[in-house]
Length: 336
Image 1 (tube, helix red, strand yellow):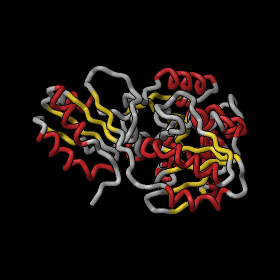
Image 2: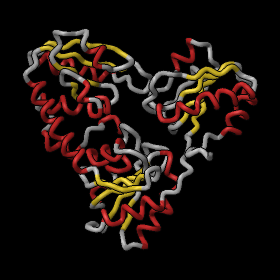
Image 3: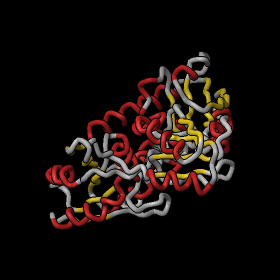
Image 4: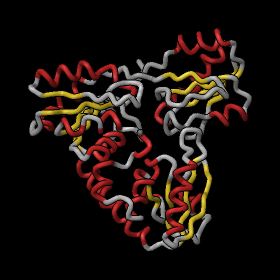
């Protein structure tokens, strides 16, 4: 059975051989982990010992450098994301795992859902960026005016990541709605939150299309409720991410200082994984401010017993930003 993704097996083996790597750490996002044993076999055929990172991988910002050092790896092979972090501690190969599925059926099903809008913005993940020119032509033939943003913060025009929607926000004033090409609601909801524009998903894996308006409205209500609840707190925990692409120490210190000026108690909490179990160890803390990945606050909100605000949401709480400005600026302050 043909794989849905291009794992660039020949390149993998060639890189290992040419670099003379002896121990390789393979890092894959959860949706691709099933391919790990097969890829490990290829690494061994190329002459190196393969170790698969079984921990969650949330994006290119979540590079397993410390893990590689712990196991003595002299090479990291990071799958599923485009290069984000420049670092030299452990040599790293990024293999983007571009999708091999045809997107046309899903796009055709999305067209009726876009009939009320003339100007359409196109976005996708790294897996489908190669399909965007063709999708653009299909939309043009259907009478649409199409924009693909290139803000220069990601590797490809039209590409979005879990915390970077700059390519969408850069064209949001020029379009009436967005079409997102890819699987699931995760990134499409991010596009809608970042731009405030209606967003339709064309899912090539399930060969269907659907809007995400209801999910977005539900999330907005939940986020306002979290800010309102956090306003009543007297003691806050400031979450400082320890993952290599999520360390925002200056932001954490700034929020701590601002909260304390407002008469609140604030404590810095450093951690790699922000989980409900980790936060439950601090029963006196009534609300948390998350300076790591903003998606933790947005997508995992129901898992946490106490409010976990993003950086910008905390600015709303402190009166430094209005709710209206937050909705305009978006939740993804780390994109610039």
